[in-house]
Length: 81
Image 1 (cartoon, rainbow, N blue to C red):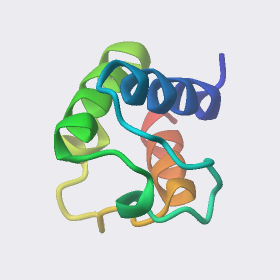
Image 2: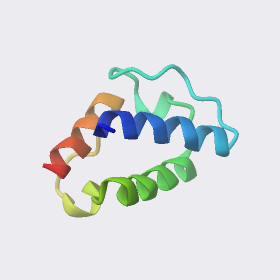
Image 3: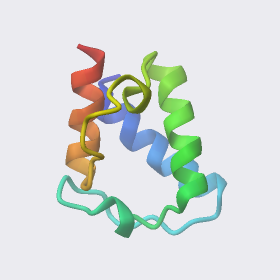
Image 4: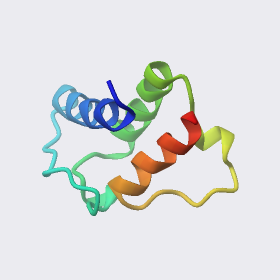
């Protein structure tokens, strides 16, 4: 599974499990408008660390926080490389 596919899968899974209504996912989607709350994002980042073996937020403390889903995906893709 690609990094993008894993991230999208985890967005959908976390939203279902937490009973959140996820909007259609696109690279331009603002993360704040995704339908997930801060708890969902914490769960998402934890699961992605397990699945991908990396936590780019703790490794890149000086990097700007991703604002869109596309930036979030690229953030992980760059961290895995």
